[in-house]
Length: 93
Image (cartoon, helix red, strand yellow):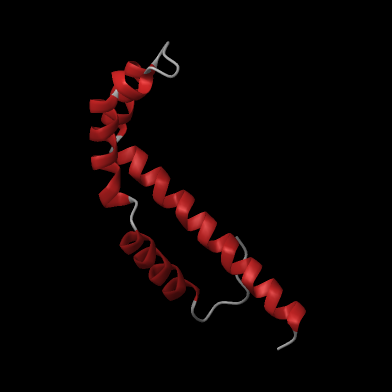
């Protein structure tokens, strides 16, 4: 395999991973919409003080997001993607 072909494949893999990460984040935010809303309400009108004023809401949001946005979830999504792509032609994201 030539250098150019290898570079193209690596670029494709990066684009696929970026798309999967984006999908993972969208799902997480959907699942944690209540906590995201509470954090947004707390943060409204604040700048630097948001760090200490909204610490509780930020912690709750992060605790909700973590089960949906960790490396294990990403690896599972990659496995599902590969399984879907088996037997198909070139991957286009």
